[in-house]
Length: 247
Ligand SMILES: C[S@@+](CC[C@H](N)C(=O)[O-])C[C@H]1O[C@@H](n2cnc3c(N)ncnc32)[C@H](O)[C@@H]1O
Image 1 (spheres, protein in one colour):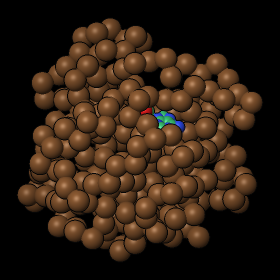
Image 2 (cartoon, rainbow, N blue to C red):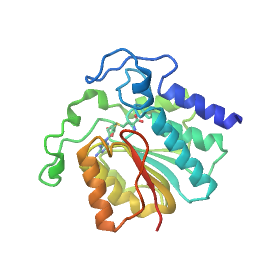
Image 3 (cartoon, protein in one colour):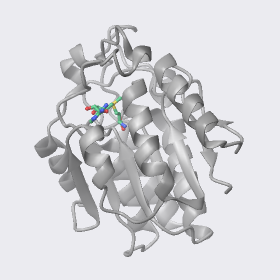
C-alpha cells in the first residue's frame, strides 16, 4: 500500500475507534464494544469521533477519490457532522492527495437536531432526535477534534446554524461530494434543495440514513421525483446509499 492509502486506512480505524474499542452509548445494543456493529456504523460510540462505521468511511473515500481522479470540480460538504469524524476524514483525504484548491464545508447547528415542524414536514411528526443530548456537539468541540489530527486550517469552513438558515448562503459555487447526515425529512430536504443545484455533473450524493430513517428516505424520493433524477441509487451498507450525478 502507498503512504496515502496507509494514512487513510489508519484514520478510518482511529475515527471509528476500532483501535481502542470504546463502548456503545446508545440504548439499542449492549454497552460492550462489538466489532461488527462499529464496522457497520450501528452503535453510538461513547468516545469515537464518528458513528458512521468503516464501510461508510470506505464509501466516502471512494467518492472523493473518484471525484478527484475525474477532476469533478467543487468543494466537499457534510450536512450533519456530530463530533466531526466524517468531515475530518474528508480533510484527511484532500491532504493525503495533496489537494490545496478544494475546501471541506462543515454544516451543523452544533446543538443537535431541530424540533420537528409537522405543519411543514408531516413526515417528521413524532421525531425524537432533538431530545438526545448525545447528538448535540459544540462547534468548539468539533474544532478541537480537527486540531487533534492536525487538520484544522483554512481549507475547513464551518457553517453554524439550522440548515434552513445556513444552506441557502453556502459559500461555495460548486460541490463535488455532498454527504447528507441530518437524519430527518426537513434536514435532508433542506440540504438537497439548497445544495443539489451546486453539485457538479460526475459528483456524488451520499445519504447516510436512507434505509433507516423513513423521513430521510421520503425526502430523497420526493426530491428525486420533483427533479426527475433517475441516476441509480447504490447501496453502501445496511443504512446508507449514494448516487453519482449524471446530468
Ligand atoms: C447523526 S449525527 C451526524 C453523524 C456524523 N456525520 C458522523 O460522522 O458521525 C446528525 C447531526 O446532524 C445535525 N443536524 C440535523 N439536522 C440539522 C439541521 N436541520 N440543522 C443543523 N444541524 C442539523 C445534528 O446537530 C447532528 O450533529
